[in-house]
Length: 189
Image (cartoon, rainbow, N blue to C red; front, side, top):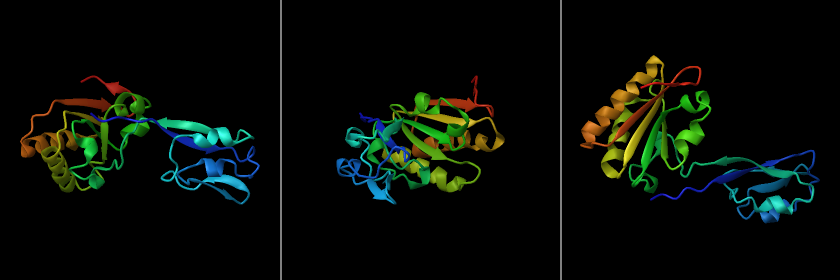
């Protein structure tokens, strides 16, 4: 079972920040620095997401602005190793890259407790994605697959890709399809 941790992301109000840097040593990951007299998040990669620096700012310039339910990286199908640990025993969501921008509830409805892979059926290399998906299904123990795509013609190829990948990998994984309309609504299946 995969344990998901909500990752906190920091926001720094430059008008409140006095630049004294009390938050900098409190950031164990080294993601904060004083630049041009103000605290700056220099890298989300270095920011540990724990929010320890919040209590260190006497000016109240640091706040949490987002909590992500995402529990892994990378997301892009091309970049994911077929043996990635987050795929083992996962409920996988394969999502067309336009969906999270169109469907406002995507994070709440599809990321929590899921491994998420992003693909563009129109702009990406279909054959390379098919091969990668076959490799992933062959080398992992994905429990279920939810395909979330747009109602536009270019997304129609994703259904074919998923069905082909399962056939080529010799897998019969429970598959759910969700179609998002161009106005952000969920279409009946």
